[in-house]
Amino acid sequence: MVEYLKTFVFYPLFVIAWFIGLTILIVIIVTDPSNFRNWATDQVVLPYADINNNLISIHNIRNFNYTSTSTYTAAYYDKTFDLNKIKKVYYVVEPFSGFKGSAHTFLSFEFENDQFLAVSVEIRKEVSETFSAVKGLFNKYEIMYVIADERDAIKLRSNFRKDQVYVYPIKTTKEKTQALFLDMINRANHLSEEPEFYNTLTNTCTTNIVQHVNTITPKKVPLSFKVLLPAESDKLAYDLGLIDTDLPFEDARKKYLINDRAATYANDPAFSVKIRK
Image (cartoon, rainbow, N blue to C red; front, top):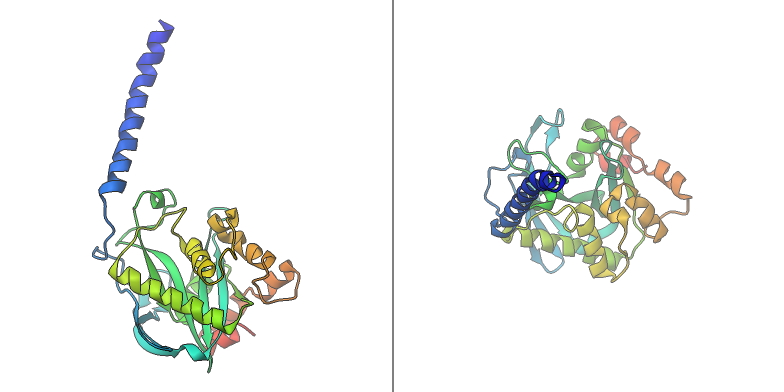
């Protein structure tokens, strides 16, 4: 009787679990990534670039004017950057409060004459869609490279989401900074033609940055849980000697937390310069 009850209870559960697993597998296999969906307003437009030797003409640089996290005036511009005038790259970390260890990360590049450009790898949301780490395992979202003005990419996070934002200068050569920037621009161009799915483990904001860095300097960034849970990825970068500072790590964290300055200089034309002072 006991064995019969076990079979009666567990066999249907096994069938249901098998059916759910098979359904998920079918969805993963038969679903193709697409650039043609009902995208959320802030992610309708894909960036791309024309590359002419050292001149990189980037189209659709996002520069929204936010009044809240969900209300904004959409704006884009085109701009040409000279690779020979690149000066520095910064690693930006935005820890999330909802789940310990989770964070968004992106890079920002500084050029001569106080020009800055952020490159952020993100899910490409459809209308009314929100992020779920679990759904991100099952081809739920496409991935996109948002190329944005810092007054968009940083202020959205520090001034409107009210997340802590750290902007770390990276210790590297000009040649490697140029190669890193160009590698990211080429990937953005690739995704504008051949879309890919986001994956919570293998194709995220931070795993893409690591891939770019390791393309330029092979094996520079090792496998680490701090890549999968990137709220501590700044500590990993510090331990690898990538952050350009002589300070102890906790002091560096305090120095490169930019929220107070971002609030003070929110409407300053020299916003990017002032938050680094």
